Length: 349
Image (cartoon, rainbow, N blue to C red; front, side, top):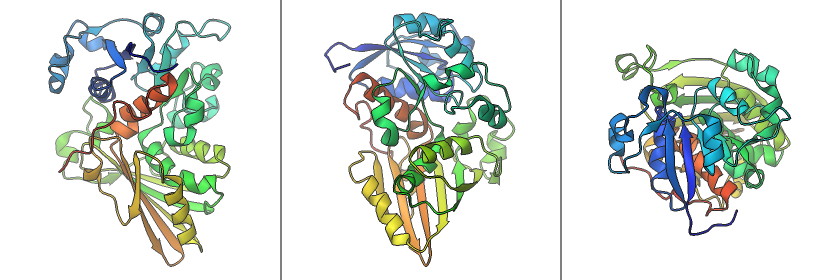
């Protein structure tokens, strides 16, 4: 669709969580769309700013109980900001018995339900059977910098996970040039917003504010998503992924360590890959979370050693790792300027 003066209509299904709130914030600054509906079962009838006081003065929008199908028939773009497992049910309602889409909306799913192309792999890593495995092939994987041409032609996009975004961006240039070592070790820390809006013991402030711990060691559900991306680019690796829960609210910091007899060649391949990428900034040394928070920017730091290379990647997990990348995908799908609505620079510490 070509850009026009008329704004397209947008809805968010499930806007009472952090991802939904981030989408509201970012869409409010987008020049080409109008947010016309948000839903949230726990907040039906409430004004958005009564649930999210930081979003005062964006209008008098109230939470609705509209269904996915109702929205898909009435708006141009539908974001699904639902938990893993809930999205697949919503998506199933958008297709008829012959697997044909119902409604006019372009759909961007924020959950993990449609990021993988194999229902059995989904069941293994998400610990539940996929309710609509026949619909997995309907979705295009939306790591924008590496799948943009397919996203631009898609009607259904699966937004990548936050860890998968950071690690995928760090390693994709090497897979693309068949330079990936046989083994890569990744240590990555995440902020508490990645655990969702509902408080749990592991994300409760006294448990996390001065604490640091590993979790899902070597078993995180984003591993097959990352490997699928690398394989689609022509090469894979043995990925040892160690995630950590860090005492910060926003951010993903991924450290990818690899042994290679050509560290300079690998580092240059990463620099070259992102030379014209608007949001990816590559430099020597370590990135910092404080230098990307609140923005869609990706900072990749390179450190070459004697027979080894460290590629560190920092993103805001709620922006580039969720809502910001979803809007990048929307821009491609709808023919908007690629960076529309995403001009905010990182907030300073």
